[in-house]
Length: 195
View 1 (cartoon, rainbow, N blue to C red):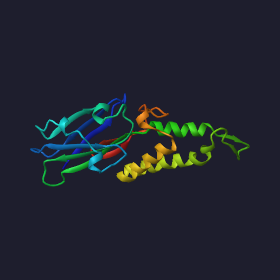
View 2 (view 1 turned 90 degrees about the horizontal axis):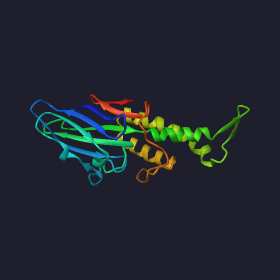
View 3 (view 1 turned 90 degrees about the vertical axis):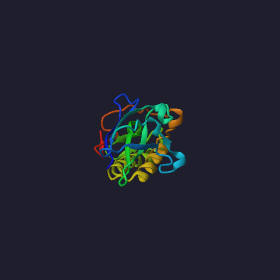
View 4 (view 1 turned 135 degrees about the vertical axis):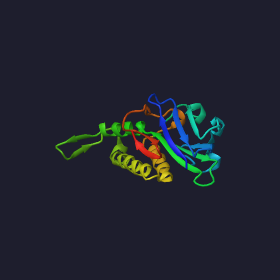
């Protein structure tokens, strides 16, 4: 059985730590990574198997943005780990930093003015009226999808959040993705944990 002891974005957000083990006498033989686009499509995977030492049952890696072919670590990353075991030899683990989406929610919330407890003025943010509550709903749904390991659904939700928040991760986006408490996820002992 593959055990992801820890898959976590560093506190500075500039690397991902992966500590994974398999049964005694076996080795980790493969490591592929996807972001929220193209999950489970081989052509979209980044093969990081070359980082594996493959001499013991435990691998301890530090993965950089360069390894992931990105400028910074933000959003959702799905790691497919393969071992030399004959059964239970593939495991998918996730890590994610969603602080930019929470910043988007806060930004849209702060553009709303409430008067007399019932009048809402959305000022110069016409899409806030439509998108404010939907962004919050998407963040809640993302939490549910990740905890229940509905990874394909989580990928779709992240793509919708990018659209709702006008994020362009390839060009830097409008929001920062500094790792902050309560906006990130890690895998520890094969459990998805919000941190």
